[in-house]
Length: 165
Length: 193
Image 1 (tube, each protein chain N blue to C red):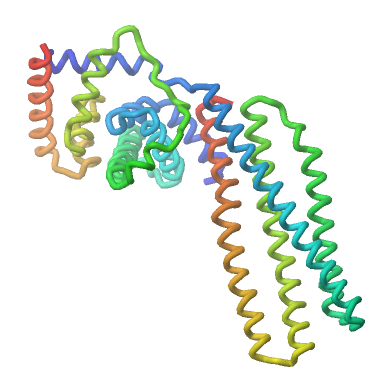
Image 2 (tube, chains in turn blue, brown; image 1 turned 90 degrees about the vertical axis):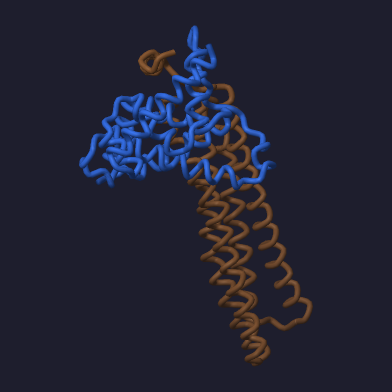
């Protein structure tokens, strides 16, 4: 694959599926600096992954898998980083656009962020309509166990929303 | 709130633009990187030209004052002065194209990449020149002293310096250029520039 072809495919992926990246980023990183940092890491990995894609799964599943793996790695690395490094001056490039009423969406992201990493990944894919089989393949657990986890997550989110009310 | 409602909230976000690029912050960051690349190139040129020029002149002076004209050291001195001139000529060329880029984000980024690229080339030429200087120094040391341990120490010194220079080349110059190229690629992919 030539670099030009790789760029073209990457561009198409990014245009079509950037929503996946932003959702994963927002669920794993909270500050603007962290979101940008994670966005950079995922973008670079996505670019590198283009020649490895063998069309054995949907592009969206491939991107989800890569973004989630990268986000989990990033979270682990972030936890090990000394606090001083976070204070580094960093001008914001990406900023979140505020829609008219996003309080409920913000709340939802906060709840997703509170979930344990695997549940967080399952929750994101569940909201985006992936099948249990696809989620299981990405997360590395059986289809049945995904079903169990999905039910628990739904119950948990519903319970949290009731508390909020 | 029921789960179905959450799903609706989730799906609605897909139709909204989620992030935007802060153009001012981006311009500032690119300018900062450009100035950094420019300063590194300028500092390296001055240090290299100064060190080579002074060393070359010092070798010539030693030959003149002692009255012992040694061919290898004189050739080395001439090469050092040639290299110092080469660096200064390149510097003046660089200063000419310095302000030919426009003030857009892409223009500033292109300028930063040009500086970083120049720095990488300068560092690469310096490496070739290093081999010539090292060769002549070793030859000169051996021909004047005929002392093998001393010659080995000189060789060892150059080997260490070579690896340090290689590390510096990769760690600072090549990686800086790569970071800028990555940034350009990313911005083009996001259709910002």
